[in-house]
Length: 363
Image (tube, rainbow, N blue to C red; front, side, top):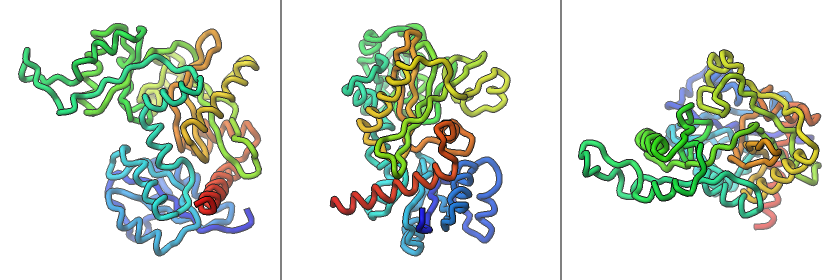
């Protein structure tokens, strides 16, 4: 990229920011902001000016910073506002209303993918296989009294049992709109409606949100990265990565994803997917392209799929703006496709600017 850019790297904080001198030194150490740090260093190596900005629960400092800095583009790594991931898309809406270019998914695509049921319905319409599922919502009026035991309120609606009759067992219970395997444990896989209802009650009590219960698909778990790069006429679908479950539960629980000691003890890791038939690879690429466009994704994204024993891929969920830390699955897949880390990060920025300019011209 010939032009050197003024870039804001936007990320989220779990507490009020410390804006005293030396803040960036704090940002540059430890594990909490490793992903952001890798991106910032890559952009600086490319010659760009990059300023990190941490957002907590007040938009005013962000608006003031945007007005003073006037960035060419915001590299979006912000996933929450005031510790709530429900507001992830709202932050992007602010940038879009202000007409500021940003990397990755739009606010609309973030909302589509946040709802695991809605995203499944959309890709299913386009001929992509999905697991059977049911959505169990909490009562609209809040927690209902349990007339058999007034001290224990009901945690799901009256029709929950009827919805579960449409499912195959075993099934897996997940919070409807949580990311990063939050709320998923070994006990999330249930074998009958009674154990399912007990786990739904647990999730409703914990998160006070809807629960999606879906057919548990035995087989391999694959991750398919997709990226739009300048000079590429088509969406680039990266080589598939695979979860190697070792002696773990066979699916991604929160501990299997984030607990390093647990992963090491059970031999859980991810790596290049091996021994996949060419016909299956072609189908995976087709699914990736169809899902990317159906869910109105942009920039870069990742699909999580299960591969049945007969080779049929099943869509589980789409992840806008996945982790792009150096050495993580997405960057490793890009490397396997011949794309160096710095080129990947700069390509994401350039694509964001090109898309922003096209949208301005079309307006």
